[in-house]
Length: 286
Length: 303
Image (tube, rainbow over all chains, first blue to last red; front, side):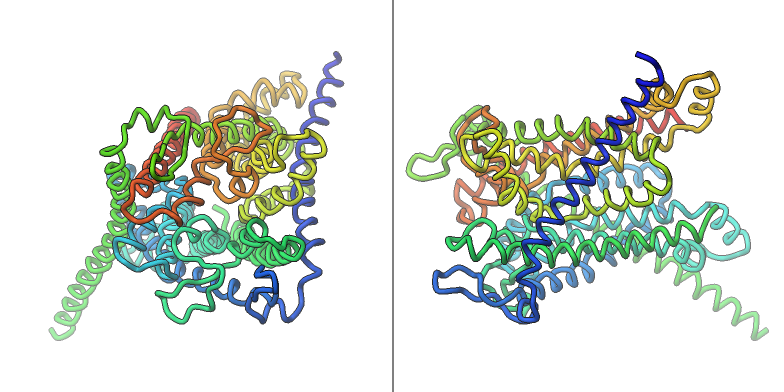
């Protein structure tokens, strides 16, 4: 075979691979959109789910799942983000390249790959039973916080590492203390990177199903009034209606409609993160 | 004189503040990792009681998973087989497509195409797994039913295909990074010597990026092993021991999600599920360590 033809053949194959990937995205989003958009209405977003005459939870809307998911994300924001960001600042700026810190990062990196269901299992044992929180919003919130903690730490570390060390050295040589250097030079330049990591972690927490399945989500829960209440969440609502109901003709469209809402929300968050990262890449070039 | 005192006092205050901040940050670092490590000690602690009442050997080699009294059986093999089968087939599908897509993205695509393709792949990565599960359960399964005439509508192949779609974006983004970090001069030297673009990719860029690509493959398999919601909705969750890809299987992750909410705290089943969780954790941790190791070797080579 001629070299030229061979090249054309392989390039065609690679292009086909890319087309398959994009096509799978378009098909999945397309199916969810077409099957889900019909159920969207004002009521869909302002009413709680309600059972129909067959006992399937297909009446009303998705208000309580939506609020439950937002509450979970708020808990993660309050618990995981300050600890994660500050811990990463310390590990990369104060302990820098010591052996302890390297081992520490290996642990953190590997924890980022632990399956979400394992976090759920720990949540059950530790928070639900041992600390006796019961199946609750707080148990699920802390479990999700543990899950995203390594992600936040890695993102923060990478954002700070992107700031050239000459900046730190210049600041220190002008008499600034370590914290002043971090506060006025490292953090401002890595802020958008850290923020991107935070947004991505929150969107991950909002889309997780397996951990909350074990730690406190309940299909008939109302909007929680206390941290110890059970709650409803958007991913669980989708799972429930797509799998375990008798009235599937009614349930599937509701599952699609809720999936469309979840995707729109998560992709929206991710778009913001991607946009911010690109903007920041253009702004600072070293 | 007074100003000297003031300066001194300010210096003291600053030094105090400095160490205070350092201490506070240290506490955060300690909290983060201590919590994570403690939590895993807890996982082991809950799995151990199970082996007091059930032999490790029958757990690892038993082919029946039936946690029902009066004669419960906790053989993990059907679950392990389900996990291995689904993730192995997913990898078989995802690796060629993912690598092809990576080569296209990093070496062939024009900047204009790249500008759209990259975010598209990131969007694919950000879709929650429950949505993939929804698609597999309601749409993909019907297509497969029409083509392959499977044993059950929900089966291992269904789960494997949806998993492949889920892990491709991870594979692509990590291996693309590896291909991009191949030094430019290698590529230019190859082209200058008369190799065309495909020959340059095949003989120069891929060999140079290979460790990164291998790490990407290993990491994406790790992700497939740990995925819960998509497989739980796609594979039908029958606990039979089978090697038939068109039959229903139940993975380890699915078992945890299905059985834990039903197990009584402190019962043998409860501890057995922790043993499954521990096994799952050990497998994924080993996979991550391997990927880390490969990646570290490769970073050294290009420093």
